[in-house]
Length: 220
Image 1: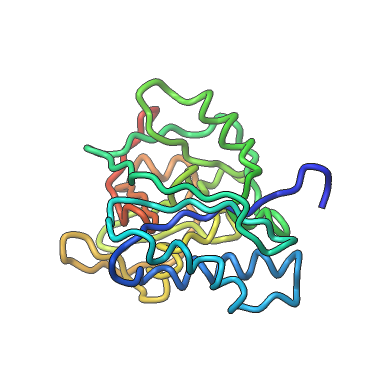
Image 2: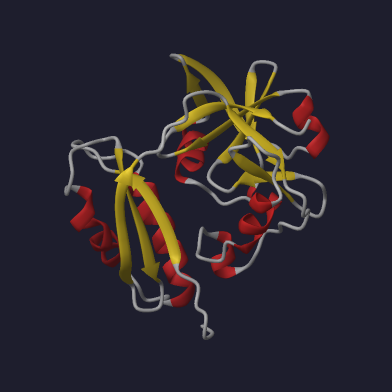
């Protein structure tokens, strides 16, 4: 690690019942920590979450952890309200088309957020988030969500090769093979899309805090 080490970021919803996605959060953090500390066990990582898992019973609250992958320790935690959107999420395309699938901790959500900070500052007024674009002009994700594209009666999400992070909601949905919206199930698989494709299909965003939400383009 250099003088400005990367820390792992993870955010999950706290509930009075076990969060069914929590195992994915723990597994993802375990995979990231193993890059720095290969001898770390899954049980060690699971214990990082224990103090927060049952601390609150209000499901409208979330816990955000900053984890040191070298010392396998939580160095900062925050418990706040889940910021719910009241309408469709408005998305702008990133100006910088240079998001790439990285190596090591770059494949996980970390404190290295410069790409998103730069692009959010350049986004259109009235937008809620920014769609990342890689050097092949493929969409990747947003700063807070994985992307889900509805084409006819099926859903697709970009592959990890595009540069997106394997979010816990995404990971769980791909394992089951479907997305559920208003009690209706739609088949889900991976497929890469170019920027122009999004103007032809329905756009949704999803993460483990908010589930799946309809979105639209602000700068189409």
